[in-house]
Image (cartoon, rainbow, N blue to C red; front, side):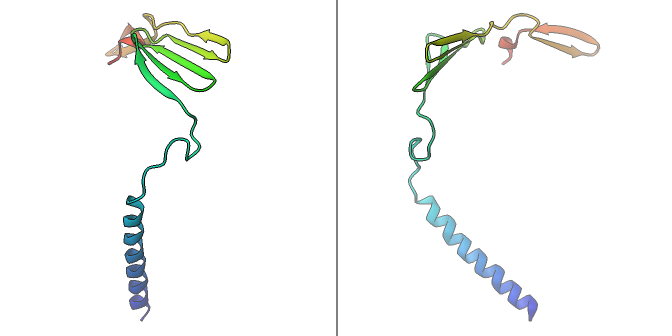
Length: 103
């Protein structure tokens, strides 16, 4: 008797869950503003990836991974990628590499 009741409950749960998943697929996707995400624009312009929000902007040079940050008139940047960014060791030998050379 207990196993019959358990099987009935599992069946009812699966039946309800199937309707729940069907109902959710018909909903339109929410916009960024609707779920509270910050408004940002991402673009690739003149060899740089640019991420711009209302107050901050970040650009990443695609060739050397140098990063420039502007946060409400405060600007700073990082050094570009150079040889010795990463030291890779293979079979006892070390190889200096540039992080920007990774593919």
